[in-house]
Image (cartoon, rainbow, N blue to C red; front, side):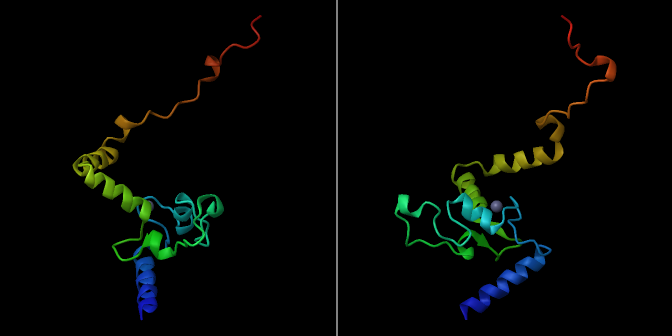
Length: 125
Ligand SMILES: [Zn+2]
């Protein structure tokens, strides 16, 4: 039965993910992915009347996949599809390496608070 298979896939994926029911890549929960696409937690469109979408319902299986090494969301899948289609896959892999190995190059160093004798002068007038 299909529902039984989905159930087994879901719990096996949660085991692989240490019990975390979130996208491995972006850490979004299923509810957060639904909200990203404009759907409420129950899977119905948030702005259904305005958009004329009252017959569309998103299920958990539409927005999270539990079949791979770890759970992944539809947002990350679309991002990866777009990167592959746009020829950016190699750049994305290099960027990931840069993020891991040259973090200090990408981001400003944390600001250190001014020493007490360097406080800006106040009430000078
Ligand atoms: Zn994701």
